[in-house]
Length: 81
Image (cartoon, rainbow, N blue to C red):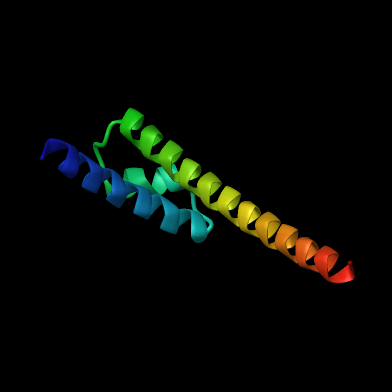
């Protein structure tokens, strides 16, 4: 149960950070303002997780584009033969 609560708190902080970043604000400052008293190490961990999630989504997009392009090339190549 403790991990679940921790995960929920981190998710709330990460959500606040992501919203702030989309609005052009500093994610860390927004989280500090929304959740006063949260240790900086927790905010830093949440910020790192937010960036990691962004990176994962970027890689997934790249992989889908590459997979799609490879399929198109294969079909075009097979059709040309």
